[in-house]
Length: 278
Image (cartoon, rainbow, N blue to C red):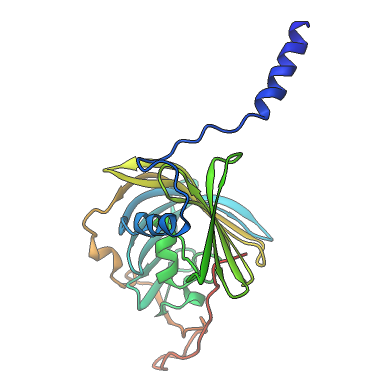
């Protein structure tokens, strides 16, 4: 057998080999509820994040990448700023969990009102409430309350596959076998979005994904946040969440549906958020 044939044989042979799987200190887990409880616990250990990131957005009519500063604190406090290629500010979003403020630099306009999904989506093109967006940016997955669950070990992919069932809805979770952190979430049976977590890093004893992606297939929208220099679980700077319009900016009050209100009018309206899924 010549060298070329040997090389081809080895490639074919190795492609069929099972992936080496590294488990945590408990070894291989076979109980679905045990994996579920570990996942829930490991998701809850990050409560604040502050630092720099790259935001990649793919929309039906455009796509691009922006630099972004992020500060988030559970349960729903947000401070996001985007910058162009020349590091000039484009927009900023602030929310204390109840109300939001959005500044758009190109029009020197400050929008403020309830922190509803419709208003948060003025900054990010997904209809999510802050109390759902913040955990996602902290590397956490909103989980459907399971009525039952099943567990498999996918040796080819090297992950646990934990499936949650509730009525007609299912949520399939790819779980890291060592860190017991969710790497992928897909929900079927209800509308919503899929989530992916990659490039896990360790900081201060915490395991955290360096890349978070969200795909809303119905809206043909993909978002990806790639973290660069961040701090986890530091004491939050509460001044970042103060809703103060920039001096000289035009202030516009909006209702829950994002409709502009005349001066002095009370906010009203409603907007329903997406459920996790695709």
